[in-house]
Each structure stands twice: as C-alpha cells, then as structure tokens.
Amino acid sequence: YYDGGCGPIDAGTPPLPRMCAPPTASECNGGTDSALMGLGVGASRLNGSSGNGFDDDCDGLVDEGCSCPGNGSTKDCYLVPATMATAQGTPAGWCASNSKGSLDCSGGELPSWSGVCRGALPPNAHEVCQAGDFNCDGLDGNSDIMGCNCSPPATVTCPTTTRTLSPYPDATMLPLVDGSLWVSASARAQTTNWTWTVVGGDCDNVLPHPTFALYSGPNSATAGGRKGARATVRIDPVSGRLVTDAAAKLASIRADAFGNGVAGGQVYPAFALSGDYVMQGEFDLDGAHYTCTQKVAVRAPGIRAELCWDTVGGDNGTNGNDIDIHFARLQGVSCAKKGWNLSCKEGATYEDCYYDDASGCTATATTGPVWGYAVSPRSACVGWGSKRLATDPRGCTNPRLDADNVSCDRAQADPTAIDFCGPENINLDNPKDLDAFVVGVNHYGNNAGTAKARPHVNLYCNGARVLSVGYNPVTSSVFPALTKPGADSGGDWWTVATIKAHVDAQGALTSCDVGNIPSHHADPNRDGPVAVAGDGNQICVDSKANTTPAPNQYSYTSKQFVEAGSAQSNAAGSIPSSRAQFCKH
Image (tube, rainbow, N blue to C red; front, side, top):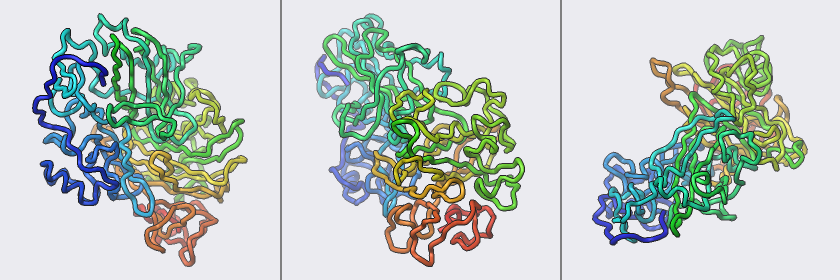
C-alpha cells in the first residue's frame, strides 16, 4: 500500500475487477447468490447453503451465516469476492498466496462458519507503484488512483510468495525475514521508522500473550534482543493493512520504532507452534509510507494436538485452572478395557499419551512410549520455545507431550521463560497409514482459579490447521465450559475429536480425516445450547455433575472409551466404531 502518486492514471480493463455483493449478515440467504449471478459468477462459485469460501460482500468475513458440517471443522478460504476467482477457482496475483487462509466452523445452536479467514489478508484497494498484481485484478501496474508508469522505476517490491519455516528453530540461529530486500539497493539506507506487526493463531488470542516473538538478531539470548509487545489489531478494509485498535480482538506482536535503514528492515521471528502467520513491515521512504506483508507458514510433519484455555495461570504463577490434553491411539491397543489414562495403562503399554511420566510422553519421562514409532531428529522438538532438553537421551520420541502446564505467570510475556503461560501440545511426527487417534481434555484441578475454564483445541496435519474447536474470543465461541475439577477420576472430560492419518508408500503423511465428537443429549452448561430440546450438540463434555435431564443423564464411572449404562450402545470396554459413540451422555 503506497501513499503518494506517480505517472498517468490508467487502470486498463482488468479481467478480474473487484465487484462486491451487497452487505449482508449471511452470504447464504439467497440474496448474495442472486447478486453474484448478476455479476457473471457461474453456478460452481455460488454459496448455496454452506458457502463458497469467498468474501463476497467484501466485509472481511467469509461465508458468514452459512452452515458447516460440524463444530471445529475447517476449510480453505479467500479474502476476495468470488468475482475475482480465476478459472482455477483461486485468486490471482498477490492474493493467490496472501489472501488464502483457513476458515473454522464455530458452535452455537446450529454450527456455522465463523467468518474469520485465519492467516489471510484482502487485496490492496488500489494497485501500487511496483512490480506485481497487488489488487489482484489480473493485471500488473494498472492503478486507478495514481498510475504506475513510474520514472525512475519503482524502488519497492513487496513479497508475493509464502515463506515456510519450522517450529522450534535453533535459539542461536533464528531465521531472518529481510524486509530491506524489498527496497532497491540504492534506497535501503534511506528507509526510516520500520514497524513490524505479526499475527498468529487461535491460541495466541486465548492465552495472555502470543506464543511467538520478534528479535533484532539471530541469537534469542542477546540482551535486549526481543522486540515488541502484545497489541490488538484489525484489518483495515480500505488499505488491507493491519492497524492497531484497542477494541479489536486479534492479538499480535507489534514492534514500533524497530529501526532505520537495513537494520530496521531485518527481523528474526521465532515460532513454536504450527500454523499460518502474517508479518507486516512498514517504513517511510522519500516522504511516502509503504506497507509490505510476508506470509509465513510454520510447518511440522505429522499430527499435532494443541490445547489452550482462558483461565491458565495467575499473577503469582500459582493460581488458575489445571487442564490436561490426552492423545489415545485406536489401534494396537493391548489392554482389556480400552480407554483413557485410568483404564488402559496395563504394564508398560500406556495407550494414552498425557502428563504422567509413566506414559513415556513427557519431557521428564525416563523412557519413551512403546507405540512402535521411530524417534525423530532432535530438531523436531528441541529449540526456541521448546521445553525439551538437548541432553535428553531419548531424543524426540513419538508421541510426545511438550509440557504439562500446571501453573504459570499471566504477566510473563517471554515465550522462552519457564513460567510463560503456553499451550499444551502432543506431537506424533510419523503416523502409519490409517492410524487413528482420539483427543480428549480433562479438568484436573483448580488452583484458586475461576469456577469455569473455557478450552480451545487445534489439530494440525503436516502443520496445516484441520480442526479448530472450542472457546475463541475472536469468533465469540464460548463453549465448552469445564466447571468441575476432579483430577483423573472425577473432573469434567471433553472428548474433542478423532483424527485418522493417510500415508503414502514412501511413508509421508498426505492428509488427515478429522471429526469432532457430538453429544447424544447436550448438557447446556457444558456443551452449549441445542436447537431442539432433547437433541445433542456438536460438543461432548462428560461430567459427574452432568445436567442433562433424565433419562439421558449419565455420570461416567471410569475412563473407558465405552461404559456400561451409557448412551454409547457399543460393548463396554471396546473402541467406538463411530465418532458419536465416544460421548457417554
């Protein structure tokens, strides 16, 4: 985005002009599709009842009001209207990468797409005076405001492709994002007032502070090297820029006055979580203000289950709710009564990966889990933001729990600090073809915290978000609610989702089948509201304090996957044959 002017104005006749449907609260109410057809959009790009993945009314939301298959499911989305889709069904120019994101299905009485296209930005409102199609209309350099027949040639060229990085980088060799290269060599030293803003994933909005950081050099241990602070931002609908707004809900790290010249344009980001991130660099040059965006995809192989919650930690590092994530396998299970931690840990065969050292999954365990997966290279779990030690003789076992977050300090903003309030994550780098797993969350304890904890879970497949479910302040999702702590045997238990791996002949994970666990008869205090009295819901929190009306009330007595007397229908102690059969009430 360029504040200035140059050359004669000549927008030409772009093949993909930005044409928006009338503003609406639901792009699936029929009116949007009627408008799209009048604008020449074909039937394959219409919304129907479940949306088309585009921001058709250009309000920064995608498929708002449209139905979706189940709470937490995700799909690709684009922050452009369907009128700007190419014949291949994707945007052109800068938007092919930068306007693509991930859209999640959020809960309520009826599941609908949240509208939030995570990791995406809209096209520039007007073409800019540099090489590239930044307003994504199919033509380069055709500004309808300032013209782009610049003389001398443009000195700024913003990036158009996505940068792919790995989580847990070497803490002394952080990756460089070099914004100075966006400026021609003769003008780099004249750039001033560099500002960097980075937006991350769902847990960065749920936790007190974002899980990533920005540094002025490659060594994160350098005194004073960590830059910026948490700030809430929104996407400006005119310029497409990230701008600070105290009333916004999207958390970022913003580093003002980062520096001048080449040094100001060189930033070293550090990421510990998978997902899609947006990095925005701003600077002044020759009396004009420039903004460029670098999209970053943080990718790790295999499956990752990520848990965060809103009541984590306290001001002194001792308070808050203790919530635990569990990751159980659904094949090769040797125990007689199959299930979670209390029912399936016969001998050394723990079938549930969780906080207990005996499961072999924790950073402090002395032996690894016995699930039969090869150990990964140390770079998979040791580095910036990791709680694993390079001296651990077991290496990066599979599966593994990064850390058990029992207590932390909500005021601690440094993600590398021992008392930082971070998420709990379980990783499995190398699943086999058709391996299946189930993810659960337990309300273990309440250390003088609040009476209600609201958790959020993300599942990643090769670093791409494939499920996002639970509390989310950005999308206003407030369920599930965990209200009863009770250690391993009596605390509220949220059975989140199942995930199945598809692996090719070379052993590479190619895709994952993911589905949330619906309730049979919802507990309105824990699962959330239902559309029709007596119907279930998209979330299942089993509890000894369950408030589901009789005769559907069920208080679980063990941590078996299927229990006698429940609404699950399968034989007690067995593995459910469908997702719905995991829910006990």
